[in-house]
Length: 252
Image (cartoon, rainbow, N blue to C red; front, side, top):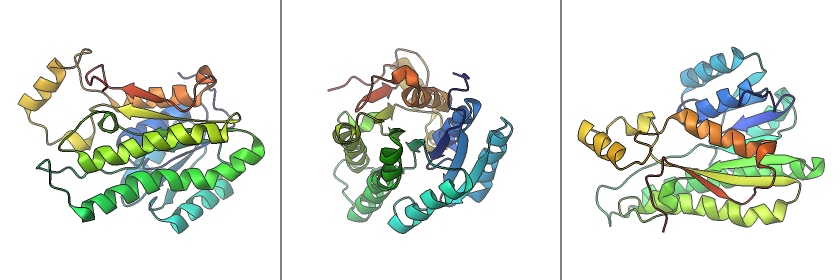
């Protein structure tokens, strides 16, 4: 985009220390937003994100918080607003994918950890920013889901269920916060991040061959989609999930 459309806005991105979150933070910065970079464990990576954001010439801050913990999220929001101002744009990106090796390997510990991070970690930041957005009659929220939440994935039962919950949250919440606040979701397909480093050459080749656009997605692809949904170019769009997967995954 690079339109400076978000100049004067404050954006909070959860899980922004690397991967998709980092790409989103940089793209929003390019478009003028001040950036709050949330991370949970990797301060070195968070500082690298901040360095790249600062090179664009916008204000930024780094704030550590486990987004599955309510009190930590409250502090995250409070500290962001103290350092940068009221939050206008929220991207709930932080998440985990603990995949099973067997279809019916339903580990309850993994289930609880996944739901806490992917579902609670989406709800809690939204819950904390909504009062301010409602008061100001302005807010834009994008939640990162996954194509795993839209189709059948026998080896992703827990992960897919958590991402389906994110999609349902967006769909149901959107009408409750309209007309001044818009909330949408992005469902990425396979994206080049450190989460797919274990894929062998044969698996990568098979995926590319079965993707109409003939490549694996880049983090910038998701950043572009997120920025579109946060922008006024999507001003008549809310409660939707925009699939960004190169056309690979047919929907049910």
